[in-house]
Length: 409
Image (cartoon, rainbow, N blue to C red; front, side):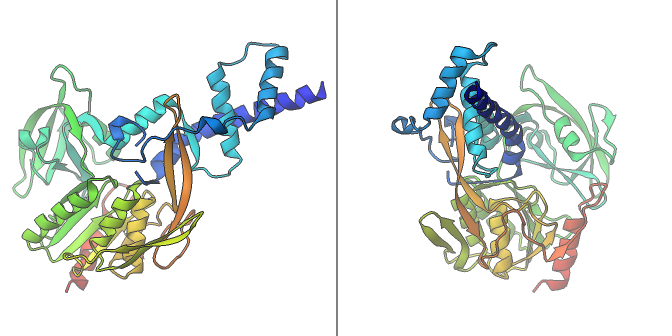
């Protein structure tokens, strides 16, 4: 009787742990990720190739099998479905590792994860940014529906579907106003104000499937001599998109650069190394520590943009691969960092597909910036720390412009 009780408690404990692990998965994934390569055909270019767990190694848990037999023979009530019990047991096992980045993802969530990484949504194809005055400024994606309708970089959003958009509105709420389901000419009407004359224009734009770029760039309206590059995430396209951004900005004779890594949750290791190397003329970018030892990653000799004055913007949403780039640029004295302490994720995960289309994230390595300062759980401290504006004004970008005006060569 006591033996049965202990075994029941073990199963229940595993299930409880599994529940808590499942609740945590979404926030962990969005907080920051650093991968080597995809978990489904949709995102095949983004993560590691799907690998099935070897069946020959499955029979290692005789006590678990014994527990299930005893449950089948003695348990009073109906048991949950077998798959639910199996997931709970896996999550209980993973919880013993005390590594929040090693976890199981159910099949539906794994598929959604792929969609997120693929970077698609229904909308009009604009990036919404707040300027230092708090205005919602629009930057349409190239060849997107907003751009084709005539929306231009720097247009200030005034109304959506006939309703004013107060400056007190949260930015994520504004983003959602400009997105929607792609069907039956579904869309949105917007009114904008166009600097410098302040003329107002109305646009009616139909929602389309938007392929979100990993990089957006522009010449800063606040200072036409400065270029601005924002990396939204690190995908296999990011290095080439950064090169394209740099080439366009150089053609406009920019004399300084702002690299915005705020709210960038990370992405692919090799691609982030390549991006960091585009701003550094050779040398160490990071050290990676695995079970087999330590490996340095070095930048190739860059042939452009290694000497312009540069500022990197960071915040608490700057994580993983984005921290890798920020840490390399800071340690190598290539740029100064402005903003808030970064998230603090210094580990690398591989993703393995299981037989039922669920997936398993497993931590396989740690990485360190050139100074070898540990940042996992700590983050990177900016050179110029700033308190975020409560009203959403972009005070960090304003500070970056002021700094570069005083320090440009």
